[in-house]
Image 1 (tube, helix red, strand yellow):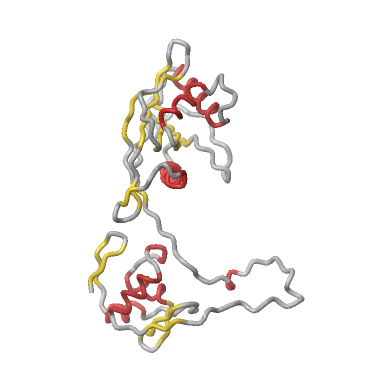
Image 2 (cartoon, helix red, strand yellow):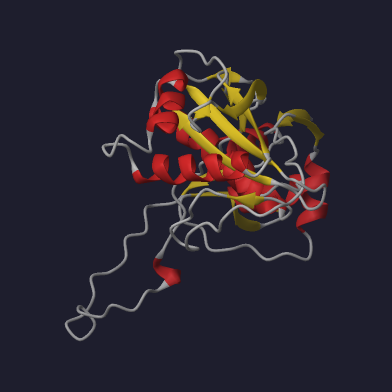
Length: 269
């Protein structure tokens, strides 16, 4: 039987399922079980092992549907509700992983392409001058070009409901004290880097798709912009060759820009 999951075509038969589960033991069943060779398996565990997929790559409904097509019987288990704690343990604050059971799975794939809008320069007053930007929601990325061709460069990624207005915010952040602290911080980084002869490229993305089928998302939703922004920041952090100016609250503040090499394009997919 052929099916498509996460954009990939796979072929699986009942014999394949039985063979690939040999040597494995079933986990505890909480909701749905499937009987395979006389043993009851959690449907996601059985399908994941048989298809060679991570559990986060598919839903329980998908697993049940595909295994049912292969002729395996399904059983809906009664909900397992933990017994109320005894008086002696009612106030215990110790976390017990074994008391948790699987609910639903979230799988999100986001994709977009950075488009070069132009170069940020300094005007005669020493303020950042931005290339023309659309009055539209989207993402933006500052790529700081180093003075010397070494290292991986420095990037800052952000999102805005109005890209043109956000550019104005960064330009005027020095004098407008109502601006956010981040705007003032990035304004200083831009001015400092450009003043010593460095270059800064500005890229934007106004079209983001979500899911394997590439459904476009409405970037007027802040949650959609933040999803794509965080994905771009994470990829830059994982790259390891770039200095990332985005502050991660769990890891501490970003360091100042260093003279490192040009940043690579980040394409999500």
